[in-house]
Each structure stands twice: as structure tokens, then as C-alpha cells.
Length: 629
Image (cartoon, rainbow, N blue to C red; front, side, top):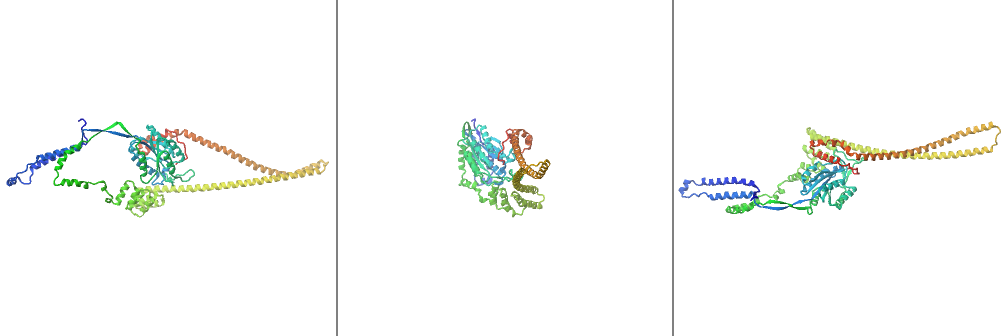
């Protein structure tokens, strides 16, 4: 009897009021009668003695019922327990491309929703959490408390990442290290990403192919893609100034999942993608094991045997089938789950229930109330439909929501006018004032970006015009050089012809006996030949100057090439020095210096960022890749 106990002892408290009620009934039967006692004697009617036995039976059987409800237990049964060794790591892409809004409201928000839905499906086994951008970091090691991971998901964003970029290989590598450090020899790696290129594909396949790790992928995005709008409202541009369009290659991601032994699913507006991944990763046929050494002892409820003692008094309570009719009618009176059918709710009430469950698209299609219909469309990200719905409403709340819908659809002029209209009617609306300032800043940034793009296009046009002019000038210089060379050749030929003529004249004329005359003639010839020689010398000088100029230009080009090479060498040296001294530079980072003050801030996102920064400080800086977003 040492194992005897009551499973639900609070029911024993009901015995006291039951006994008190039985005593009250017993006394009441002795003190009350329908006919006065003196009349009873006059009529010769013998008064019925109060049924003491009846009251005693009622009290006794009521006490038995309460004891049965208390759940007396005097036996134990041993049950085998099962522990699941199923483990998985959720890897989330936190690159800048997650800000793209090809799926509403953007990829980052949808990734968070899907991650939280999937974590709620994992009630067995252990789960870890990894995020990656330029490098990968462990947010949470393997844990059985998925609720904690769900609370962390809303605070994850690209803004908390130490390095920007997209390196899915590092994310898978950190996930494998997490599973190995936990002493596991198999597990699932679930990657939520919006793009994987061929380099990442080859690296991931090398890690997961023919290995005990199964790789599952969820593609977040669309094949058409969309520009990346940063949190400050600016559009992400490339090094050439062009707006970046983030596209998702579903075919490549499907190949990676197939070769990794898992499954691939593109993001869906319903929950079918999460259900498919959860069903695949919750397959416990090979991962469940019996823990015979930890068998569980459970107490059996013996109160069911006491109900047999209550059968006889219950049958005696039947009078003219009244209790039987009552028992038969109970199933009709008791409400059931199907009783809460749709006919008991209006369309707006049903739509509001869907709205509370965050099924905004279904709610928007079912709402009859235009105001709630517009709100549901706005929450679903269908801003154009929300604008059409709010335009026909005149109340202040709908006008304010109309301005918000204009702002979300990047129709800044209409949004500013609508906010101003709201402020004219309600000058104290601080939300409208704040949103108006935000929209004006966004409009200014948009105009600045357009001006920058126009300036870049003009600059490119000027550069092309300058290149054409330089080519034309080079061609003209070459033509001038060819003309000068032809002139110099002609002058040389004429000079040689004159020299030959002079030599022939000298041979024909006899020598003179007078030295003075010969000297005079020589001086006269020299004086006559001087202009010709000077002219030819000037031509040679011009030709030599042009040739020297070409030589100097060639030398200058050759001298410029080593300087460019030296500049490249210096860049490589700077890159090497920056990679080797990354740890020292990180120590001077204000984010690292303020880690002591993060705890006092109590901001979950900042706490997670501090954790990631500490991990980044303890590992070498990632190498730069072509994927910066």
C-alpha cells in the first residue's frame, strides 16, 4: 500500500459539502410535512417515518462517487520511453538581396514567417540556428526548445551581420560543424536562401554529397527578381551605378538539393512548402531509439472500479423513464466542434478570424466591409488594390491608410498630398506628420538617384565623345607625319640632284689661275647654296622632331605601364595587409568597443549582433567574393 495515492485529490474536498447537504435533507424530512400533525391524527393517517436508510444511502454513494473522481491508484505500470535522435540545423540567408520586394512585403519578412512556421513543426529532436552573409555564424547550438528559436527569428536581419555578401558554403560548413560537435553522425541541413550560384553549388555538393548530412532548400524569391531597397529607402546599385536586380535561380537550387540527398521547394503563398519540408525532416523511422534503461513508471487510475458500485443506486433513480430520457438527450444538448459552423458567423466575422490568423489574402477576398477589406489588402502587400479600396472611403482612418498605401507603392507625390490632406483635417496627427517627413526624404533620395544616373550617363557620353576625338586627332597626326616624311624624301632627292649638277659644272669649267677669283666664286656658290641647305636642314629638323615626339610618346606609354603594375601590386599588398591585420582593426571597431554596453540596452537584435561580432573577432576575415549582395 506504499504506492497508494490519489491522482486528483482535490475532488475529496467535495465530500464535505455533500455530507452537509445529506444531513440537511435528513433534518428537513423530520421537521416538514404537507399536513399539520393534529389533522393527521384527526384523519387517522399514520405519518411516514423519515427514511433514514434513504438519506444514508445518498450520503454513502455520493462519497463513493467523489472518491472515484479523486482517482485512487494502488498499481503501477512500466512504459518504454523513446528518445528521438533526429537533429537538424536551420541555415538562413541574411544577404542584402533579402530586402528585395518581389514577394510582399519583402523576402526577409517571408523568410521569417516561413522559419517560424517550420520551427513550430519540429516538436521532437534537436534544432540549431545558423545565419550567413559574407560569412556564417552560429546563433543557437542544438536545442530541444524550439520556442526560444522562434523568439529569435524576428530580430534577424542583414543589418546585424558583421560582413556583407553571400556565402552559402560557409553556412553549410558551420551547420555541419555544429552537428559534429554535438556528437551526431547524421542530420538534416535546411537552407532558406534566395540564390545559389555555380561556385556555391560546387562547394556545397563537395560538403554534402555521399555524406550523412541531408540538404534541403527553400527558394525565397522569384525568377524575375526585383531591385533591392535598403532600409534607408535607397536602391542598391552596382559598382557601375546600375540598379541591382536580385533574381532567384530555382533550377540550380533544385539540383543542389537533389545531389545533397534532400528536397527542394519554392516559396508558396500557402503552407504547403513548410508542410513538405517538415514531413521530410520529421521522418523518425531510422532516428527513433528505445531507451530501455529509462523506463517510465505510470500510476493506474483505480477509480473506474468504484463506478460499478454506483450502478445499482443509479438504476433505482429511474422513475417513469425521466432519467433515461435525460441521458438520451444529453448528446443533443452538448455542443460539438462541428456545431460551430460557418452559418453562425457572418462573412466579416469569418474574414476577421482569418485576419487574426494572418491569412490576409483570404481575409481580403472575404471581407464585405470595405474598410477592413482595404486593411487586409494592405497587410497582404497588395497596395494597388488597397489604394482602389481606400479611395472610395471618406473617414479619417481610411484616408490615412490610403496615404500609407501610396507611400508603400512608391507613389510619393500622391502620398505627400494625401498626408497633407489628413493633416489639414487633423493637425495633431503625429503619425501622419512623421510619415510625411519619411516620404519626403524618400522622394529626395529617389530624385538624387535619378540625377546621379543622368550624370553618369552624361559622363559616359562625354567619355565616348572624348575617345572619338582623341582617335581623330591621332589619325590627323599620323597623316601629317606621313606628309612630312614624303616632303623630306622629296627635299633629299632634290638636294642630291643639285649636288650632282654642281659637280658636273665643276668638271666642265677649267681651273682659274687667279686664286681670288676662285675664292670669290666659291663664296658666291656657298652664299647661293646656303638658303637651300638651311631649308633642307629645317625639313630634317622638323622630321626628326616628329620622330623624337613619337619616340617620347612611346617611352611615356612604356613608363606608364610599370606604374600601373606597381599600383596593382600595391593594391594586392594592401589587400594582404588588410586581411592579416583584420583582427587588429576589429579591435578598433566601435561596435566591438561597445560590447560591454549592449547588455544594458536589452535590445534582442543588438544582443544577437554582439554575439555575431564576437564570433567574427575570433575567426579570420572572409575572403571577398563576387557576390556582394
